Length: 58
Image 1 (cartoon, rainbow, N blue to C red):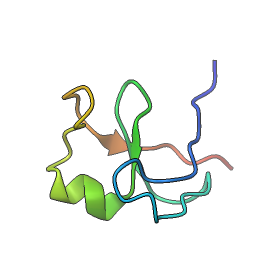
Image 2 (cartoon, helix red, strand yellow):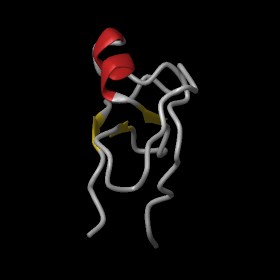
Image 3 (tube, rainbow, N blue to C red):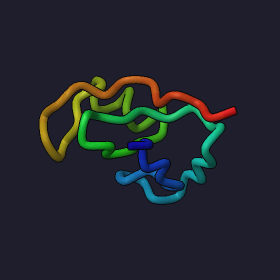
Image 4 (tube, rainbow, N blue to C red):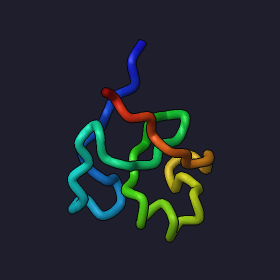
């Protein structure tokens, strides 16, 4: 099963996040831009899980 590569930040909604853009995700695939993730100290506000770098597709 492939990751769902969401194309926007769930916090600011203004960041365009194409599949090759740097982003952070939790284990539930909640997706955030790097600045929003940093401001939340890499903790998902939805589930409390760790936000980690989203893998890039080639």
